[in-house]
Image (cartoon, rainbow, N blue to C red; front, top):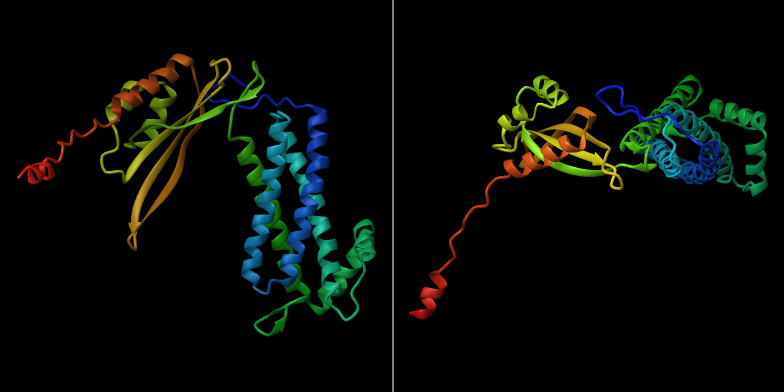
Length: 306
């Protein structure tokens, strides 16, 4: 945990056993996901749906890698990125082996399971199969077979989408919670502790970094709910010495009878002292709208007595 600046940063610590666990177990799980993904894109005729599935495949791998790394208390972004790249590469390679095998099984003479084993352990064999498929094309678009350069571009786009989504998801999940080095535990979120009018976003961020709660109090609670800033706290539940705060601006717009929220991050994991965190909680209680005193409905009672 870095306390040198205004914001929390991971300490960079990790265990070799934890990293190896994430690589080995992550690769096994990722290959299972790759098997399912390969079969889906073989039999799904909708190209655009396959593109969304590719993004989902990458996101699942990234989230799974980060979840295992956090389970083993890895606090190094560099290690997280490296392991995610390794696991994603293993899954990406295996999905090609399964895809070629599944494609071959659609023929008149189904290829046995040993064919998948051969494609997996012999990269040259897999590469030759992909080159042959690229010449003929594997699917059609608007009645024409997609092959050659066009198919290479599609495959390159798929690769970029999977890796981008995997890395982005892993990094986001790793950066979601702070870690208390004293207790060796991840911080627990306390969402929507305080909600205020947004005002000037740049000024709000500057005042928050200066721990100017008076300015935040002057903003007041949201008036119409169309533009407000939400503040979440994270803390170590064991020692109570680690506190961080997130700020997120929410803009609500109505379209077609439905409300849509546009969210943008103002700041992430601003370090707070325990007293500052308690002051924010007290301010939240102070800014809560007073409950409306609704008089009891006496009309029924009067009617009954009549």
